[in-house]
Image (cartoon, rainbow, N blue to C red; front, side, top):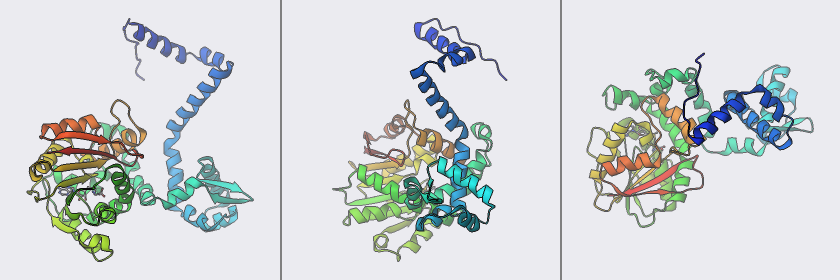
Length: 377
Ligand SMILES: C[S@@+](CC[C@H](N)C(=O)[O-])C[C@H]1O[C@@H](n2cnc3c(N)ncnc32)[C@H](O)[C@@H]1O
């Protein structure tokens, strides 16, 4: 173990910091404050939070077990006893009981009248579009995070970089070769609804006539655009294999029907022109700064004067980091090996560099789902 020496900062704040470190490192101090009423509660509260940070992986694996065993779905129709749940999961009663108690502790279910029932949180986990798929998909991220330090040190061959084929294609300049786009497109489509709703609640598209969704996947964002703004013309640009998937959606619903589909690569091809708004929905955070800059300067060239750009994706809190973006999405994109979650200021710096002006952050109500920036040519 490394020995860390306190530094020689003699300023008032430096000395206060060293005092705090010495005080809270002292076991005698801890024994003392356990007897002081209000401070005792504060310290216990922080102790509980430390425990949660330490045990977070176990909590999410409990959630994963509930999903994999279909327990939440099974409880949808009503309360079930331990033996019914044990029969359903084909797992011994005492182990089923362990799982059920842990899920009660996490308030995902509760126990009443000798049965287990879904809590409000449990119901929402089933109901939120795309969440069950994300919970299942997380297992891949956790395989990479088995060794987080390797990821921090730049491990290249990760499970997530294999799941997102265009990541590999960028690195090896392979362009858009045949890949598992059907698999990732489905994951994106199911999780898109909340992102689209939050984006369109946060930024109004009133007044726009013609929108291009760049890296738009199978069209879920443009679907929601059409539900709210039926008069806006919509085009979608994505890799050829993804466009093939989007094509299949066309006949499934009228909101998909009139989307103009354009196959290409925003890293290799000229972007189509004639749009007063270009959107990048969960696209930039897949890429490192140099690639993000390249995409943004192509967008700048494609837009008419006064044309607007809409960026919506999870963003870092910068000097006020948030758990969803600065923990979850930052490690997720790092495990992809090409990705990066950016703060508003980091986005703004690249946008200004490629020529955009009037860079604006729009404050929504659920920043853990997505955050919205617009900029003007
Ligand atoms: C994280 S997904 C987001 C999809 C969609 N916008 C959404 O939020 O559901 C990133 C999208 O960018 C597309 N993409 C990646 N590299 C691309 C490239 N070089 N040219 C065009 N699209 C690309 C992917 O195929 C994928 O659909």
